[in-house]
Length: 233
Image (cartoon, rainbow, N blue to C red; front, side, top):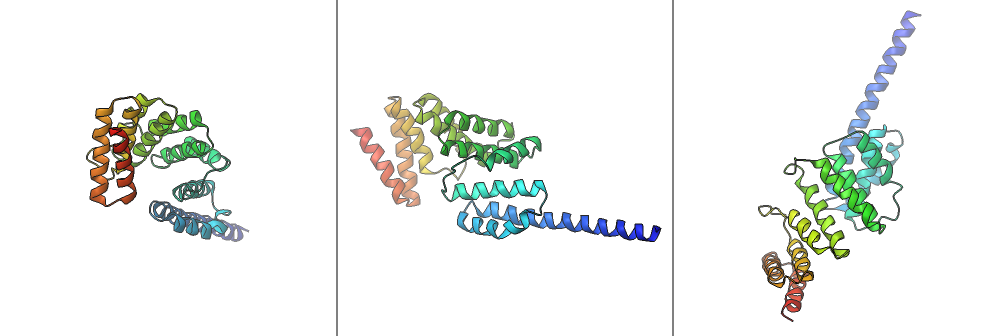
């Protein structure tokens, strides 16, 4: 009897270890898809789809990680969020199980979902929660801090709260960061223009035009020229 008990315990232990290993490998693949979403979101979605059969057998932490990266990948692919059925449990999980990287990310994508759903106050609240979750560690998590600030600026701009839009649009720019794009400058210029502060607006339109020219970004060059023309008009 004791011998059978030892065998049973051994089998259970092997199953537990194997399950942990499977979840670990699955999380690595999910994280790889999350990184891939930044540059090739369609490929990330395809990778996540290939993992979906294994997700049903995974633990809750892995399933929530999977759903978050799927939401991210769809957002990066410009697939409109039509409901909050997937993001709601993800946010609940990562606020209960705080993670320095995934909790701000989950809150940010909650903001993106509610932005698509036209619920600006709720979206704004989630973006601010994401910024609060980052806390003082903005350098390490600058990518999320930047996009949250930019999204908050856009929401304020759509509501004609231009002073707040400028405040957050400037927060979205680290002047020493190479990830600044012409749109960042255009957003600030547009907010200044809406306030009637045209000199400041022109400074940022001009910055956007020069940067777009250096990057040979044709669409941004035209956008900047259009804003400058309206400025002169």
